[in-house]
Image 1 (cartoon, protein in one colour):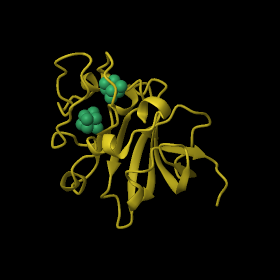
Image 2 (spheres, protein in one colour):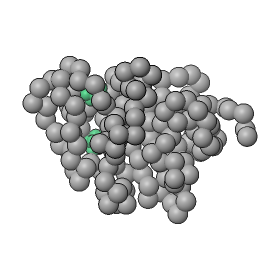
Image 3 (tube, helix red, strand yellow):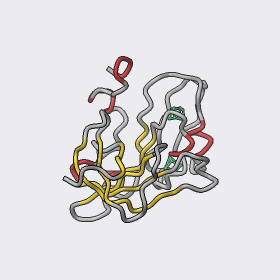
Image 4 (cartoon, protein in one colour):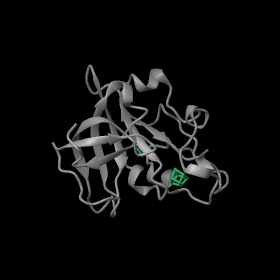
Length: 165
Ligand code: SF4
Ligand code: SF4
């Protein structure tokens, strides 16, 4: 599935989802990287050692979720836009998703946006909490958006503006 349409299967995703117990403790990374390519900037970006050392440059990232504090510093460093941070502890009925966003216009903090799934289908509306777009992000802004709690593993993109429905 991934190779033909770019969308991972449920089975592929299952191996990448942080354990439920860890998700209950606060923000945590989810790395949706499935293809063995010579790439490791996620490893060099993580100063907490949560992304384990690559034995081979073609390895897939291996995560120690207990070392990850959800800082999100790895998100903008992934050329595959494959890294997200999920916070299921944000509120009673909302989670947050932090995602890389390389489109224009950028959303403004506080703005409502469409929430999209991995296929680009609209699944709801959310509110932009934070836009990180500094020197560190180096033209890969990182957007943090609220999502209904049940969609924390579904929302992986946003559309600025939207149809307000
Ligand atoms: S979110 Fe922060 S702590 Fe977690 S893997 Fe990324 S850089 Fe490391
Ligand atoms: S930087 Fe992104 S594409 Fe490269 S290995 Fe890490 S997660 Fe995969």
